[in-house]
Length: 483
Image (cartoon, rainbow, N blue to C red; front, side, top):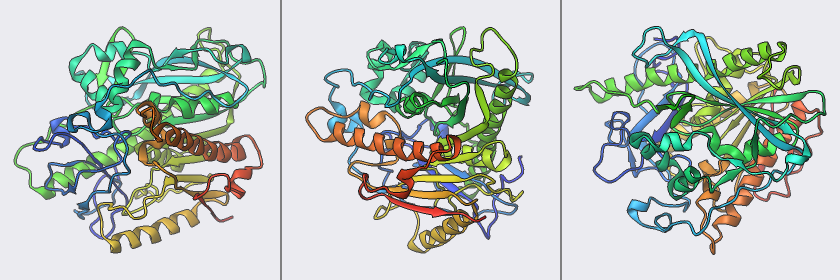
């Protein structure tokens, strides 16, 4: 068991619930295979008790000791698309293939993929004891203006994934009615595979990106492409076993790992088991980020024919960013590695215990951090008012402990929910309603604040939006940090 994966009864250091959303009466736990459509569904099941049919996962980074329970009721819906099995607008077929917004910057989008194996870490779930941690990594990079407006594949490997029934069901569960359009190629990106990088500037700042639990980085294509169009290289990691399904070369597909729970566990034993696994999982995600950064360092200084960005990566200007569970991965990676010069957690706070992960090693941020979050006020969030007050105090303490130049930005607008950082609300929006307009506005707002923060610390820009957010009414920007 990794250090920091056990529970301290006196202090839960961080917790994060992910619920499945399936038919009433079905088992929704990890062993039953249900993966919550956290990008599609803003609503949690009505009950989320540790005894357990609805609890799919609790993210816990914990100290030495024994169990502290966290349980309660779920948050209310914001009115996003509903499960087609239960009726509602999601049950209707999409009238036409939706289109992603054009990236707003002056560069085209290039993309290249690699399979990278970390020989220093074992593959925890492979039957081969010699197997090592295996990742698919995608580099999205600025290409010349001649590639602006080109269409590309939205999700490479979608047909491979769709060919495997169990895996296809998981992926379709995330993308809903848009999944057949992704598989067919009707939904497109703006990324051109293997396009030549833009000739200037000479080097590009780099952002490493982690997706949420049970998701995929391709669901954040709009966010990634917009950053790239403004001169960033974005390196997205498909985190094997926490990704909904990873398509590797030679038609190999690795699905989300479904944990097999031993029979006869008490609720407390089940919770302890999930707690230990969660601490290990966040450590693994952070280790993926650090490994990829190490790999980039080596490739940037080596003239390899199949790596078009040799010498073009400015590795003195690197950030780690993630959404949801990926925000916890990014935060932990930044705590561990000073080479990351900025940290972005997109709705990755860990209520009711903490805003950022805390481990027994006591490591904190050495770089400015951005917590960009949805306004969850007025929602039932699975814990008591007293717990929420304790969480807010802890959050304030952690933000004040960040280096100067850190921010907590809370977004509030129509239709905004946890999945609004992704493409999913736009892909599932129904023509003739306010859904497309709301989804597009929310995409633009999340992208604008993300880029403003990264521009400030990786592009040395003024970050004017951080000083005046009036163009996005309802947004609260709070600066934090110490010298």
